[in-house]
Image 1 (cartoon, one colour):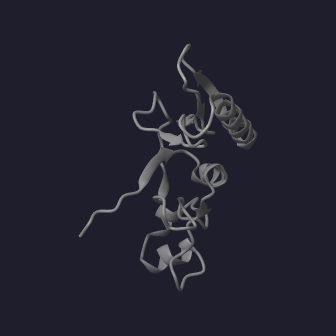
Image 2: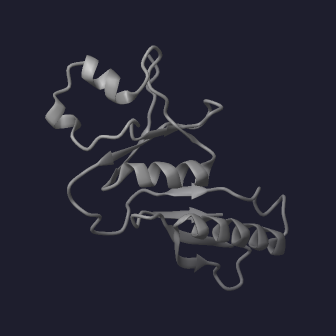
Length: 151
């Protein structure tokens, strides 16, 4: 069998990150398994104890690509807060790259996307535009401080 993968992101508020990243990436919340009205109903039927479901909402904490092409992302609630720089991050490729779009257009496109993401709750960490290089990107933080780039 060929392995598949998902990206798991530790967080303190999965519902908040599900909402943010659905808007950021054009994903949708993962629906409950077929035949179930909600994830809670599914988990209860699977025998997960009520004390483990305390505070759980109706979602799985995961988002999926509605076209089924990109990987599933699961936001796993953990008790500890984020404490340092990410060792893994997403690059949201918003432009087709140097060969297909002039620098000024790429910059304007990235800036517009960054403005949209900031309105959704992201914050700008820094601009990645080395002097003399034909490269422009911005590093942002999601609502819980996880870094990601827009290129």
